[in-house]
Image (cartoon, rainbow, N blue to C red; front, side, top):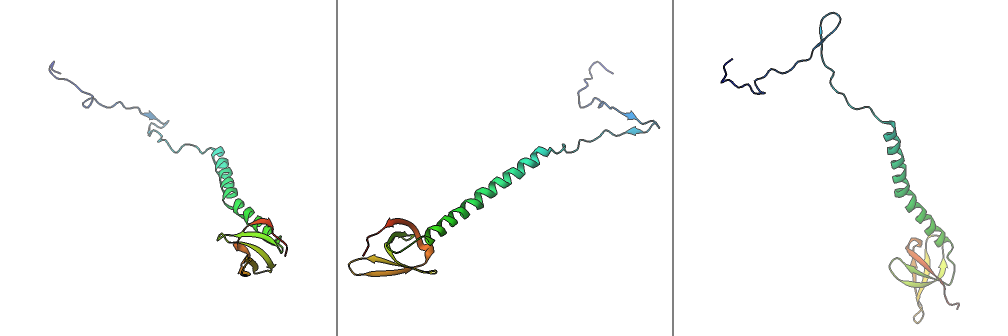
Length: 127
């Protein structure tokens, strides 16, 4: 080679590493595969799934049961507030409706479904 010739990395031959089998055939280098699965990760995903299930489904179901018990315990003269914000006194409780007295002066009554009761405020005046 001349003294003026400069060899760069692009021009240099790539280093080759070849190994041979017993019969003299070259062996291809192994390609890296996916990393091995960790069984702890699977357990963590299962625990996370159970936790999310409990939060999403158990909480509302428990609240629904409490509401059902509250409505079942209603009796005459209980003061209640509906989900619409109406305050009234329970006059009659049936399976599919509740009769409220909402105005003493005009004796105004209202029939509501049991699911419309938001809270029980306490025992009202006896008549």
